[in-house]
Figure 1 (tube, rainbow, N blue to C red):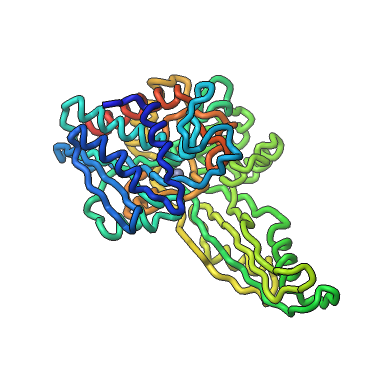
Figure 2 (tube, rainbow, N blue to C red):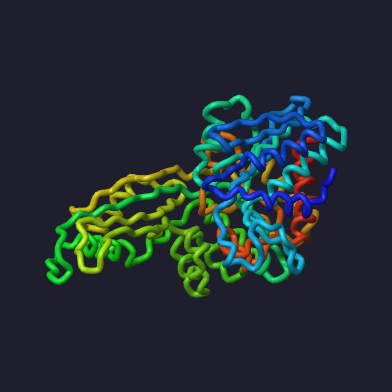
Length: 434
Ligand SMILES: [Zn+2]
């Protein structure tokens, strides 16, 4: 069997699993063929036509509770004409494999697959069941994937520990020293639709009661100033750890005060980085506006959609009250389109220390820190069931590659794919052979 991580990833990237519509069944066939060749037991779960997830299982001795290697097969859309390479071509250019899903997260899916196959080949019985779980529909919230699985087949997915996407090794933060982020928490999500109705009319006779103009003014009031900085325990710890490479954080290490951290991040300009800013606050992005259909007609209604992300421990109810007050117009109607709570796993577990130790064997200089994922992932649903879930992909990526995730020219270096597979396999072996 071909166990070259680069070739396997290239083949996997060529399977177009853009969600919508997803069509994850094609990716399931890809995995099923591999597992069948290796004689590994699989089970598939179809939530709707074409929307299938797959579980492969290596039976252990049962001495310890199962480990789940979790990944999602679907990807977000990609426009071919904007890319340097075909996003579904699996092309290699200058040492990088390009494709939608190269980082999010078909690469980790292949690393998880190869770790499982490696243990199977070693012939040693693991001390726990090792479960490979590739889900559908993560990018649209998991209704046809993880939600369906945990609601309908909870017994198939009981586990002690889950590894999923959510953190990478990052180069370029410190000179000559990678920082490995293991995400132990993620923010909550609320998609909010705000509708305004007003008086329609002829565009030549403005009357001051235009729904669109009223909504526009309310949006301005909401977004005019940034939300305040809130120092959550995970972020306090994160910057505390980063002080090992950024000595300008020392005053914050000494007094642990939010205002000291904010002042330092402002002085250094770091708070201008959207990723740093998003770790420190609840955020609001205006993502959609719809109103009007003619140049000379004042529309009777207007609607806007916001993507709101809340830090762990924040109440959505209280935050919505602040939003309503800021927008300050009784003509506005609010509707929650989607919502999920923030989630947290404890960062001080034997699993965290084990992963950190294995990373340091390959990267002795590395800083390993718990971190917060700004986005949501399937991890939240395992955490809800009390299962410790960490987000970690052992690729070391440059800062310039981070915006390519969900962006243009998503890619992973061949070196990362090869070294990452080796490192990930070592971690999984340590988790289930000792
Ligand atoms: Zn993802």
